Image (cartoon, helix red, strand yellow):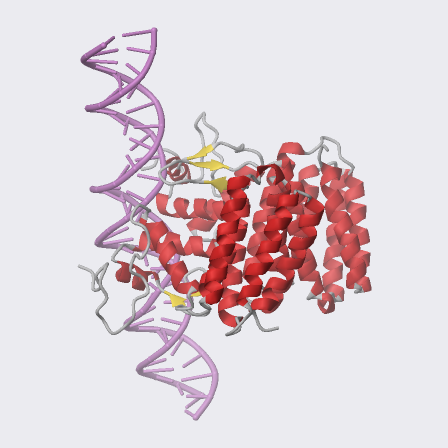
Length: 232
Length: 232
DNA sequence: GCCAGATACATTGTCAACAATCAATTGTAA
DNA sequence: TTACAATTGATTGTTGACAATGTATCTGGC
């Protein structure tokens, strides 16, 4: 019944939406995940128009879940929509990154650390250590995207100690917008090994359980991470 | 066709949703505004269940716009929903207020101020001054809710200089959660005049156009505002 | 009496048709 | 040619019906 199959794409027009994601989620969640991936991978550039009917046809589902997925993406800061007008992929400016997203992100992480110093057990620290190893592997293979995602996972793992839903929500939005920024501005050959090593320092600081000390290092790291990955 | 009229409510069960808001908005926006009002006024307490069918029946519209309104409210941090389960009114803890919402709010305002020092013209400052007068009126009448809303408007007016959509979004969410906090914890007789006077000091600082100076005062003000209104 | 499985009900998830709105185009007159 | 109003087509907004899921209730066996 639909012009495009749900799983196949033989047409000339490349189809970003093919349910790459899990089977167990609602259509809305799957749609949101797939569109998000198309955006943060750079496949859909800022300003691109997202038409409900077009996407629903490509995915082989109705417009309802697509509409709700677009609203979710709007809450994540990835798209912008206004009444009776097409939804478009959002853009991000450098000023917002430096003076808003990065400081807010810092607050989120310090908040999580402050109230969970007691929860940094062996298992937790070991997981972080594994992530650093993964970063080093990505660095050796010069896999920029892989390293950035592992970097985000590192910080996300710390935030996961926090159980409040809204904290996670702000984090999701801020990090997604930082991803938009990276896609636009990342250097071709940043010092990836440096990034991995910096996280090893952070991990060691965590073991001290001294919040002042951690806070200082963390502030330093997050403020400088951007310049390591992007043009000034 | 619907058990409850859209504009009337004669039943024994009080009906919080009656389209109190503007006529020109989409049903989704009106629904979101009305439910939001019911929450931040304290009519709907944290943990209250929001059932799509119930609300749509009370408002006399279909479930579609209600569903999307609930998603908007979730993005605003006012409700929490999980798949196939009722949406519930969100709660907020003191730690989140002190160590996350307040610092994030500070970042947002400083960001807006930093990049708009040149835009503080006479009209702009006059508007802020009028708001302070309104605060004083509310203080005299001991109208706590009115003063808090005027307080929020004051800060919102500064943020409005910023044109990025995502900034406004974070602000909306943070302030809504701060409202939840106020409803729960506000003292019966806080020093309302003090609040109004504090904003006069802020306004005077703005005229200096010295960001360092403004930043210091602002940080002081926002950190202490909470304790003026709430129990320790 | 109490627990496990089956059943019924309430609630959310999805769909396809219809309505409202907006942007572009076309036609018309100055 | 240009300005402007009507028309058309594309897109989002809304609706009611149906499907999927989760929760509470009932039933039977121990």
